[in-house]
Image (tube, rainbow, N blue to C red):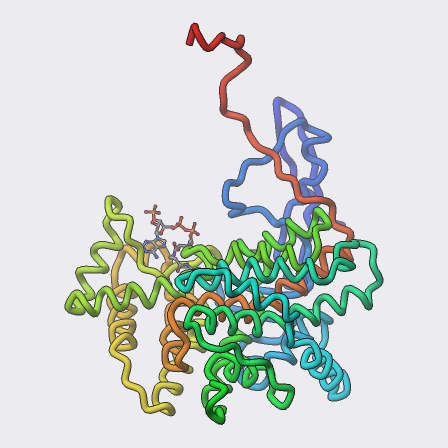
Amino acid sequence: MSEIAKLELEGTIYEFPIIEGTENEKAIDISKLRDTTGYVTLDTGYKNTGATKSAITFLDGEKGILHYRGYSIEQLAENATFIEVAYLLIYGSLPTQLQLDTFTNNITKHTLVHEDMKQFFEAYPAKAHPMGVLASMTCSLSTFYPESLDPNRSPEAKDLTMLRLLAKLPTLAAWSYKNAMRHPFMYPKNKYDYCSNFLHMMFAMPTEEYKVNPVVVKALNKLLILHADHEQNCSTSTVRMVGSSQANLYACIAAGISALWGPLHGGANQAVIEMLEQIHNDGGDVDKWVLKAKDKEDPFRLMGFGHRVYKNFDPRATIIKKACDDVLEQLGINDPMLDIAKKLEKVALEDEYFKSRNLYPNVDFYSGIIYRALGIPTEMFTVMFAIGRLPGWIAQWKEMTENNEPIGRPRQIYTGATPREYVDIAKR
Ligand code: ACO
């Protein structure tokens, strides 16, 4: 017999079904709440609200578990390529060799962006933040592919939009950097794999032969996998919300990129390095900055610390911390920021303030240090996150559209003025 939740309101008892996910997480289905009771729920920040049923990513914040389509993040980060993971997230199973080859070839074929888009780049100031450029360019893609505006186009046509996005985002990302440097754009090269091609477009110059470093490629592949999806969160829910209005996929992804940009979300990776540099330049007194983070009068927060759902540890942070040590050793880099980060982590983890609030390093705490070691400039860190998160956003959009989810439209509790008479301007 299925379980029932009972709610008593004004002397009447209402019953609501309890639903259970495949990993035994339970929810009260309140979809009929307003119809039957006239009440809505209030949950600012959606701390207790399941916005959808999803079969893509499972995470258990208490146990530090993260699975994509049932596969653990640890196994995927160790064994898979980012493109394999993208296929897994979007289509639901690991690809066969033939499926992977076809998928890879299709992406490779679409890495060029329309020549006219180069002119857009030239109009941005050199100091333009690459996230602003990337979000705008991604939305601009829709103007070159107007057929993508039709929400009822065939699944094959939708697949083509997904492939175009996966193929072109690294090109647009690398070009936003080249543009900021006022360096010549490097065109994609079909001989390279996904990560190598991105590195080539970022760092090659027309005057020199570019040598791809396999250590850098391996590290980048791992980082992108760790970022590839994270169930419902600020940017992913934004993508689903925008998609629920049947806006085209380019617009949805541009909205996701914008949501990711904030320092409380993906922008934290840039904020972490800036914080570590600030601490370093200030003499490296970690205790002083931990005190600042605890001071409620001080707006400073320990960036890269804390998470809405992970209350024990973030499994991605564990993998990244280890990768950080490995990459710096393999590349022969000694980065004082890593020492400060480790000191900061140690002090915070032993501090009652952080312990009692279950605040642990999140995915962004160490990722910036690896990106620095790979030569990626600080302002590009969140762009890297966006490239990694793209398959997750696409998979979530695909699931939402295939499930015919209704337009997202939350309710509110109105707290403003009650009806009053208009007052003529002369009498106010
Ligand atoms: N430094 C100091 N105190 C913190 C921090 C922090 N990094 N994070 C949370 N707290 C404190 C809050 O002040 C609050 O204290 P209180 O109970 O005394 O008021 C308590 O811990 C709970 O914090 P909330 O902000 O209510 O938690 P929420 O789940 O809303 O926020 C968030 C989570 C935004 C990630 C928060 O921990 C934070 O701001 N962290 C720093 C930014 C960051 O690293 N963001 C990246 C997250 S990962 C990602 O999006 C990819």
